Length: 291
Image 1 (cartoon, rainbow, N blue to C red):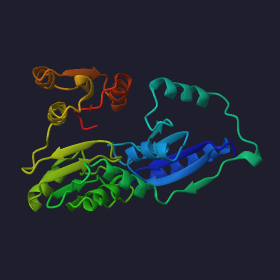
Image 2: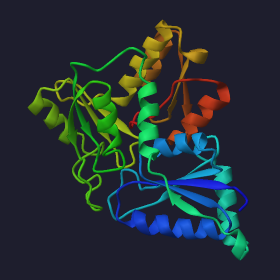
Image 3: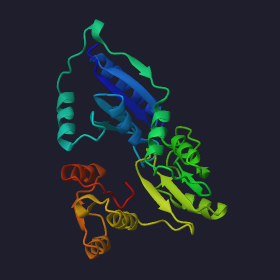
Image 4: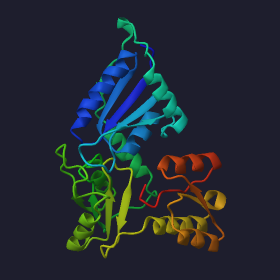
């Protein structure tokens, strides 16, 4: 084959099997080799696309939408989501005739058994070296979605006492009364177990809501303000700016201005935040919705 590789991850929706098979058939028919990761968080696809030297990554998920919905997200070889321009190019290619590989050049497909394990180890390296979560009781709500195994594993291996919610996917119950669209589930568990913290993810685990020890949901703008202030004090905030979307509160802007920092606003969508961060060399950004 031509050596081109694509990694494919998915969440826990029943239709993921169907789309995974369809994508595999289409991609191998053009000569690409397909590496199937199974259910993994969306950020794992970005990370593994780069670390496994793939040409493209695909995540099959409809994020925080109900189980009957599904969709696909594309990642470039650098592990970042494709730009609007690149997606338009793909749509143009799809509307034209796609050249198929000769019989001797069709691609191969194989399952990657350690995809989740690789990502779990990577996630642990992002935690400050030498620090642990010993003595911390954490509720983690995985929305019956893509992080149902990875997220509790990471927290437990870092030393936390873990109270898992939404870790019994059946193909239909993703985001159903749990996850970041229903943070009250994790909030109730925090109070019931006397936990120090609640973490509520969405179906593909690229969105997070944080719940404090009183069961209150922390506002995304407040979390970003806290991080920006701490990073600025530590000399870690590059460019003296936080990147957020037009949805962020004026209070966030005023807080930053009062600290001599700037708020850079983008269109709504995590990919626009990341594009601005990469283009201007900023290292902190997010959406107040938890992306």
